[in-house]
Image (cartoon, rainbow, N blue to C red; front, top):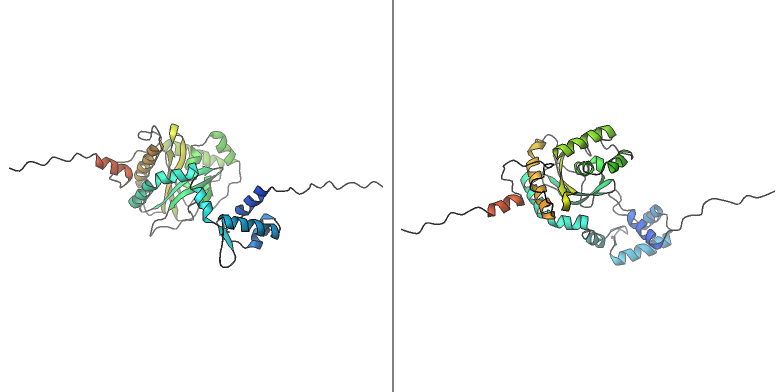
Length: 293
């Protein structure tokens, strides 16, 4: 009798780099701090291998060990993240304008960049006495579930949009846009008006307003958004300050049409305390003093 050989696939052996990255990859917003055994179980690595790699990462600064024995992401990772051209440099340029925008609107302010089918917040300023939001610096959310993400999706190539539509779109609330036809219609309106306005999309009682930010060659490189409590104000009253701030950041990034881009909403003549308004004030001609008689 012939015995058939066991043809079950051999377990894939991870490289050293893959093991290290798998350890860093187990941390997320729901698992900020983990024990050594939890890291071992989530990565599938042996406890001894996990202990050795975690200790090396801790010594380098990629992980931090707490007094209760749990580990979390270390400050060295944050330091490296600020060097990313699409995030850190953009944040450095945009931050003064973002503070002015928050002062003008008293809203939560978010700066997001695309990463695959998601958006990552490279800056998130939370205002006092306003609606709490689950966003944070470095936070990641699906494009279809946020105002900033919908803006970035609207200005993405058609092939990429269809790829997102065909993926498993999570429904966070009853208002979350997941139907491909509804998304296509909404994105067309965003491209036409230059602004995305959504309510209760990611969480309830939150209204988000977002606009694109352009870089060299006028390509949309990021999205700027603010969130307030639903019904607290008209979303259109927030657009002028958003548009002015977006144009200022786009101009600083070298966008040729930042001053007169027809796809971006034009601000009304308000004295918004944003950086663009401050620059205009410096050009004010001061009358000469009359000589004493």
